[in-house]
Image (cartoon, rainbow, N blue to C red; front, side, top):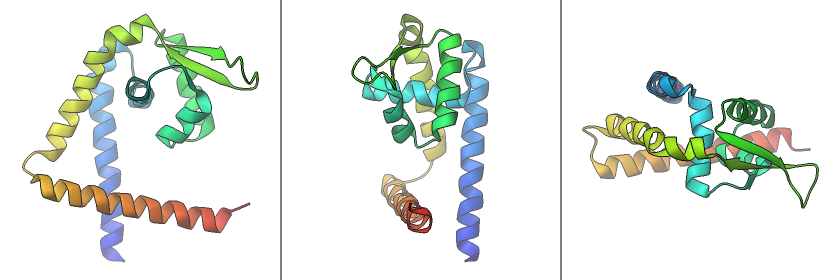
Length: 149
């Protein structure tokens, strides 16, 4: 159990350090790490995506994604358009501004990954990713079993 507590502690430290780096690196573009995460999701999966799909894709709460998207709208990075097929939902589109900044934002994510994996053999990274995936799957299944409706 002590090792798992250490894993949780280290995971928190990794996330916090990554967020602090991104917040500082992207400050000149007036972006925070949560906003950049949504932009990265849109860059990777294409825009014109339903807001609900972004919630599922970034695995963040619906209210948090909604707040973050509204901030991105105010800053001119995305457009939020009512879904023609379902008037209760919204579709998110990248703007020209976000497309102009795509290379800048992606470069900082790349730099972060390179720094994090420095000095670690590729095989160890793959093993680490598989262990983290299993931990995430276990926790998802446990949460769902405990709080299923």
